[in-house]
Every structure is written in C-alpha cells, then in structure tokens.
Image (cartoon, rainbow over the protein chains, first blue to last red):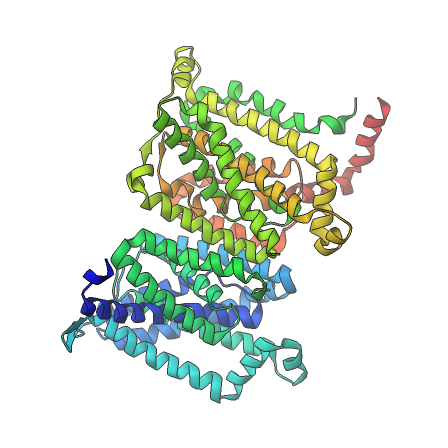
Length: 290
Length: 331
C-alpha cells in the first residue's frame, strides 16, 4: 500500500502534521510546566483554550482584526489564570505530595466541568477562528493549507519566546531549577510560590494560543475542551511529564503520527493510536510520574 | 443475633418497599429510582477498588459499556436472549479490569499513574465504540432487544422498570453482602495493609499484586454486570451514554459525598445526587455547573464524606454508638 502513496501527498501531510504537532506541543507544555512546578495536573487546560477561541470570536465582532483579537484573548486567558492562581490553587497547595496531586486532579476536573457548563449556556454552537487573507499556498508543487502556514509561523514565534524565557532570563532558569529540585531551589532563595503563579499564567496563555490555532482548521464545540485537555495530558505523559524538551518532541511526533493515521486509517484509529501511545509509555515507564 | 452481621440487609429491605410507595406515578419516577440503584451499585464497586486498595479507576463508564456491548453482541450473534449472556459481559469486563490492575500492580503504578492510565483507556474504549460501528452500531447506536422475559412479565402486569429496579436491588444486596464478607475476611485485612503501606505489606508476605488484581476483578465484574441492565433502562445503546462525564463524574461525586470505605455511604451518596439531579431538571443548563462545583468543593473540603460527617455529628449530640452497642450486647 505504501508504494501507491503519492510522495507529495506525504509531504503535505507531514507539514499538516507538524502544524498539529506544534499545537499539541504547546498544550502539553501547559500541563508539563504546571505539573513539574506545582504538582498540579491541570485538567481544566482545555477550557482555557476554549475561552481563548470564544474571546477571539467576540472581539472580532467588535474590532475586525484577528491579530488584535488574539492578543486580547491571550491577555484575558492570562488574567483568568491569575485569578485562579489566587483563589482556587491555594486550596490545593495546602496539601502535600501525592495527596496534593489527587486533590489537584479533582479540583481542576470539577473546575473544567463547571466552566464548560457555564460556557455552554451562552455558546452552544461550533466555533472556529477564520483567518482573512491567509490562503492555501503552492510551494514547489505542494499545496499547503493556509491554517498550517499560520499555525507554524505563530508557533515558531511562541517557541522562540518560550526558549528565550527559559534559557536566558533569571526567572526562567529559576523555574527549571525548581522543577529539578524544589528543596535545593528554595535553599538558594528562590520564591517558589511566586514562580508558580507566573508559570500558571504562562501555561494558561500558551493553552489559549494553542486552542485558537487548533480552531483555525476546524470548528469546535465547547465540549471539545475536554478532548484538548486529554490530548495535552497524553503529550505531557509521553514526553515524560517533567521534561520540557521531551514534551515538545512528543507533541511533534504525536501530531505527525495522528495526522497520518487520520489520513490513511480514519479518525478512530488515529484517536486510538494517541491513547495507545499514552498507555504504552505509562506501562513501560510508570516511575517517571510522581 | 448480632446486628453487625446483618448490616448489609437494612438498605435492600428498606428499598424493597419503594415501588409500592412511589411507582404509581408512571415510568418517570420508576426510572429515577432505578437509576439511583444503578449508581449506588457502581459507586459500591468503585468503593472496593478505589476506597480499599487505592486503585483509582477512571474507566467505570467504559467498563459498563464493555459489559453491555459484550452481552448484546454475543446474544445477537448466537441468537439467544440477552439474559443468557449477561454473565459473559460481566466476566469479560472483569477480565479487562483485572488485567489492567495486574499490569498496574506489577509495574508498581501509584494512584496518579493508574488514574491517568485508566482515563486514557476510558477514552480509547469510547472511541472504539464509535469507530467499530459494524459491531456496535456506532453513533446511531443499537436498540436493546425487547426480551421475552420482560414481555411475559409485562403481560403479568409487572412493568419493565419495576423488574429492572428489583434486578438492581438484588445486585445491590449481593454486592453489600460481598462487601461485608470481604471486609471481615483476610481480604479486608490485606486491603487495609496494602493501602497503608504497600512496601511493608509486601515485606510481611502479603501478595500485593494478587490482592490488587482480585479487587480490580471484583469491581469491574460488577460494573460489567450493570451494563446490560443499563442498556435495558435506556432501551438503546449508544457510545456517549458510557462517556466519562455521564458515568464516571457522577460515580466519583456519589462515592465522595457518601464517604469512601463505608457500607452505606455509596447508597446515601447516590440518593442525594439523584435527588439533586432531579431538582435541577427544571434548570437543565445549570446542571453541569452544579456538578462541577460539587466535585470541587467535595474534594477540597469534605473528603471524608457526609455519612461520616453525620455520624460524627450524631455521636457528638447523642452518643448513640454506646447505646447501639448496648442493644447488640443484650442478645
């Protein structure tokens, strides 16, 4: 069967897969950062994405400029993240160790269900962000979808900023230190609580952006936020849960694999391959988590 | 006679009279009561594996579906009544659960890992129910067959839901009896040791993997048995009726509201939740919000459950435990 596949189709799929993979990588980073730093598996992350999408759509209705709307959406999602960090998360941080992870799972799951219920009252339709002026482009005989070009371009900027943040700034380096060794970092005088706030806000913004990009290429109901959450968790788990680089690589690989699987075997096999990857990694290396 | 030995009998006896009191109002009320029992049984099942062996299984819905689909598909294929294959559904679901718990225990997965693992399995199962539409009917679902048993009962004037109510009641009674037996036997002791310190349990010679697998089998077997009866309540089987928000979220809330590791907790929790659910019927669109809030608040503030909370309160006010012990001692 492989011989019958047109090579240019494969390359087109590969590019779409990279686009999807970059979105997954950003979502996965949202999970990895917060889990690595605070021990909270944020099961509400998909709702952040949804809030991002809906904000863009609402803002575009008032000011017809998508780029501006995306910026506003990222700010709003960030502010929402800050609000949660000051209200809900302190209740979770009260506990320690495994207990905290367990309470974190249920508190954020409850939050996700609550917010989904809240959003569905007002937004019961399917939503997607339209990019005016971004057309499918033919490069070297290959037809590249406009949404993939936009996603890859925006993601490259986002990843460059994240890289600079974690590699060059003091706060970014301090964050990685805490993820490696919390006690050691505290002894060095790093204020973990403030870092957690910062990182939670960053993860919310990143998730919002990822959601907006995911909606470039498909319409999504509010209920899709749970699927986004699960995809994010799977990417993070496959990437090793505490490794930033691992998460990005896992996101890219899973994006490419699921795009190819959807094209050749249909969406069911694609989804099952995603879950199978997570199950496999969990069974082979369960010790990496906790 | 020692009251403690017959503790399991109280809820089934009380609940057995419900149809005579409330089922006159047609199928609507009967359906609510039947669903209440179903969720009580599911919460009881999760109570054993999660409450007592710390294995947080987040695929209750998927396993219920496994039981329902196995029963219906095999019955259709052989051309016999679905009641003949009910046990097969339970055993298949139980084998699936036992294998999962066995792998998890062998790989020394903590509570977090097993919860993520089973959540991934839950979603994979739902995807599979959607995807393998040749077998399951996919999105459109398939009709649950109107069985001869139900037909002849209805001819005798016993409605389908009354039959299902008593079927679940028998199931609940058996689960309660089993639960009481487990807790009084070496299983309960082993579960307690494993939950408190797995390493110490192993060092003391407790077969940790075996006990965890057995707990997993018992719970998922019960969930699998529930499947075909659930399908009969709805009259139809479709993948999303087994989804995480529809089954698991409710079962988790019920279990935590009622209280982990208690005998009456899951029943009290199910009663309360089904009641809240009905009160919210008028405000459909706010139902999810309320359940989300409940889940959050319960896990943040009331992890011991309402049964223990009420128990403590009553003890403070009336010191009833001594009096109850007094009754027991007299015989």
